[in-house]
Image (cartoon, rainbow, N blue to C red):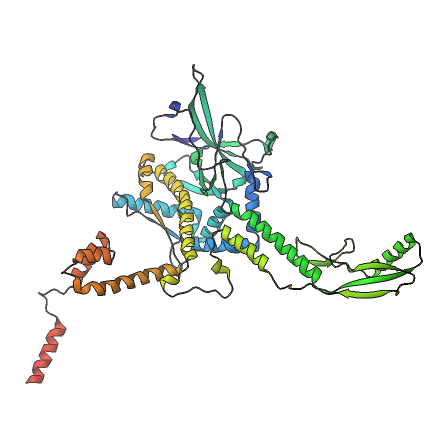
Length: 514
């Protein structure tokens, strides 16, 4: 396989081509389109039964992310995933599992720091993680120096995911028996400055809107969300299941405002005496009176403004009823306002649905709720689930680091492609933590272990060995046991050396006795 960086090719170790033995193409897990011809444009049927392109779906994610309640939940997730801890890096690489030399580990560490600088991860980590979370994918173009590839990646440029799509093109060969075998599979990206958008049943547009630039796969760093809609082979974002609850919440909030404005005031009933006027003249007389005294206040659901507009019939419209001659004449009465206007249980219900769809603990948004620094048992199960969810997000986001680190190490001839495939499972990325309940759990666990150790103390040496206590009561690993043992040996005083303080104390005691 070769890296084709806009005309510049870097040869790699060739691997045997086994695709000609297969009749089924590999199932992609990155949402790429598997095409036998020129079908590069994917479509998606949304929950409201309308067919959308992937670009339209991303646009919808961004729209619902701007809604205040959804934005509040997203910020809660991003703040947990990317912690801003003072004087600590946002993310570091852990290479303890690698069975390589220290010099190689140092080189990998240095190149990872270079990647963080290219991403400006120290200052933009929150924005990058948020962009990936909302869109459900992130793309970067790797810029290198074609004259000297050993300098590695020179720049990383962000690409709008609405303008790029990964394509997996399958070429088949028909056998004499009629069976089609896969001969070759080409992977590449299609980039279109005007966006990749396509409606079903309509051919892709011609010209600039339908043209695309074919880009080598190793030129692009692609990190999907990892959530696949297998029915349509599409990568969906983490906000996908929140589309319906957010729309419902928006409609309920708008209807609540309209209801409050419409039912809060007391509405009037006008009984207009029209005497014995003919029907046409009576109606005209009624319209004149209505135009003179009618309320003109309307509510704009887009902006939330309440304004005076004479062009619309309003929700505060009074009732106008004619009376014929012989009635009680013109009369004005009032209708009582709505009751129970302070109940918002339905709004809170849909807010809860939004938070549940985003895996946010409901307790974090309850009024007068604070973090409990009590015992471990007081940590809610929702918080534990939320912590696991954040760890899953980080593991998915680590694919971006793996992709960039792979390219950087190969370009600088530090490791080969096969070497990195072997070592990537042993490379861990450690994120800064500011979840205080983790510290609380650790302290509480240590307290419980020490209490258990105190209870088992009379039986140590009789029924339990020191190794058993360290392994099963204190839960120490072999490395921790050896490190603690060496530290204890270093801390013990040397019997061959005399303690000056002890000598002085003994001399003072001897003088007092004399």
